[in-house]
Length: 587
Image (tube, rainbow, N blue to C red):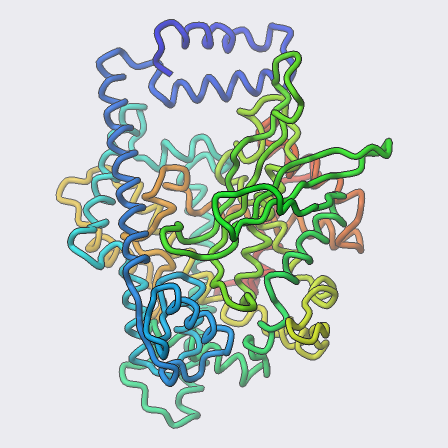
């Protein structure tokens, strides 16, 4: 970006872009490349460029250390149990805990809960022993703080200060201003409008949910010291869900095997976009768990086309980063030299998950939703149809990138899809209608809790990155005071506390940008409404438009314009509020 003379040539093309014989896509490419260079410091004088490069290098080093510290905490921590300690837990969790013990060479009667979300979250949801739930929860929420040798709090503080310096070098008061200017939101104020709108509604909902949990505890005659604590909420929410809706999620899990949900995913992909998946076990991968697929489609002229190579890496294992994500070994492009094999422009896309591996890998509802979510990102890469790699695939602004992923989740949640593909892993029977009906009735239950868990993180992210002076800044004190200012409901904790908030501190893409999931939820709820309004969630015309304007265009057109072309208007927040059960006005 600072090669002498290069920016001058780019600036010359940029200044004449509307008076040259450039296509619309080439104009967009010119604008994005020019912005890349200016945000990388190409307009700075040599001394400032040197300082900026040093800041970038230090940020890269700190973010890497932050990530490694979280991974090390997750790798080293283990809650070693005996089978009686797992009272209340479903058989699938017990089996996964036994598998974790075997992988860690424990004694034959041992079971292990690690800090993998697919183990620890169901454990604190189902385990009857409150003391063990508390022990697991406290370790889970203190990742990045479990050892003085892995002090992510101080690392995060250094990252925040460096980002502030970076923003001021570009002429912005805060890093939040610097980040949002190149997003659909444009300003931190627009972000806060959305977050605060949802926050106040969700607080009322979460407080009503808490009252329901407390009423349940009273009805059982149980004396719960301290009331509902953070390690109790999921446990008693599950009890209330069963009592109120007669819905026990553990009864659904046997119908959500990884194999059946992958089949459902590939079927949805085929019905929407005509994609076909052919497994290639002959292709060697970096780990035996990884599956490779050719993704093909039949073109209108009847010919067969290779669309992408897709890798599925679904299981948690030691030294693998936690969470779920999509990435690419190669992005789609048409910008190839003459004579180059077209294969060089075919995307190689991977979805990574961290499901607990067992003899039969059974997914929770959230896990299965995550499978579809990451596949949505995968389709953003596989269906990309840009000329230039810089504009292809997920190379879009942060508050648009989650639209393709979150939109795909809707097909998993559709009862017709579940009825067809949710089959019992042992006898193959379809999920009973009665269980599906109970699932649908209970879907919005505990939505206040889930919304608070997420929105608190997004608000904290924006607050952290709107600080103008980090002199004597104490991150943990700031966290405590900000949550108090927000009126955080008792018994709810941020889904990601600062010391393990990898979205913020393992890199810069989601910094001052964690709100994008909610922003995209406005878009995805509205977009899926287009399918519902057609009367068929696989309507060919709507699917074709979704492919064109959401999954294939990448960054070739501004994202707000893409949405308008798809929907014929700007997005409507009410579809999202309705989905969350938050449409009622706050009194």
